[in-house]
Image (cartoon, rainbow, N blue to C red; front, side):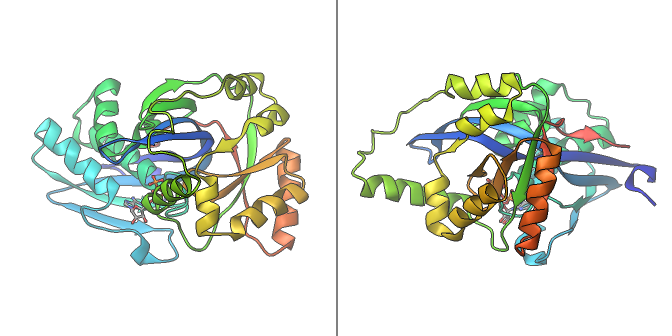
Amino acid sequence: MSFAAISDAVHVRAPGKINVFLGVGARHDDGYHALATVFQAVSLYEDVIAHHADDFSLTVSGVDDPDSVPLDDRNLAMRAAKLLASATDYAGGVALRIRKSVPVAGGMGGGSADAAAALVACDALWGTGLSPARLHELAARLGADVPFALHGGTAVGTGRGDQLNPALARGRFDWVLVTSDAGLSTPVVYQRLDALRAEEGALADDPPVSLDVPIPVLQALRSGDPALLAESLHNDLQAAAVHEQPDLAQTIRDGIDAGALAGIVSGSGPTVALLCDGPESAQDVQSALRLAGRDPLHVHGAVAGARIMS
Ligand code: ATP
């Protein structure tokens, strides 16, 4: 039976993301860094199914290591459901089933997608009927990437990454993703960036406290030309991620040798996103990397944010 056929339950699908551009500024007193980023939602989805229940419970499938995803209040989807219940004085609970496709701790915002999907699913299941603005507000309280998973598409994120403005992106962009067996902890990668900057002699105040996305990135997205976008891909966290997993640099080189236009570490990594010239080129890159013993995924963007499927 498909999820969509289950009655008395709500099935929501939310996408993972790639950071096409990620600029990291100074670390604020609250521990967050100033960011200027461009997110693109891609066709790799998390499925969350919410059933009526008296209490709160959660199951997760689709992961190789069941211990990699917490099933208690540390899980972002669980926190999302409880936050919505408390914000709306809903007295019941929910049984959440998460089917994961986005790699865990992969720099693609899988947990954030689960949280966005859980918010939308519980809002529909419980009939709490929050406005999009109120859902966005709750999403931002759960994590900096959660509002984007609600909205999807292509968007500029500033502040902690949670202040979103849609970016015009024409056409479709084809990406080949190369995932890693071992995840990378986002806080560890940011700490490594701070340490590398300190080693380079950058004073604490040197990185800007607020920053913007460079115009050429936005122009490339608007043009719909992958070759132009390839020239603009940038991630300030990449050196730190490569420091933690040195083989990522080779993965990017292998992708380019296989025919990709450019490659980048997505977010805090370790997923590598290879931008290709179109669907056929992406299939060629995927085949070549597969022959080389890797397990690449062909996805495209931009796709919609969290959507009710049933
Ligand atoms: P970030 O959003 O911090 O960049 P990420 O995209 O690299 O994270 P996620 O898969 O979202 O990685 O999860 C990071 C960590 O958060 C995991 O290692 C796990 O311990 C915890 N976590 C909490 N909720 C979830 C969830 N629903 N799915 C996966 N991991 C979760």
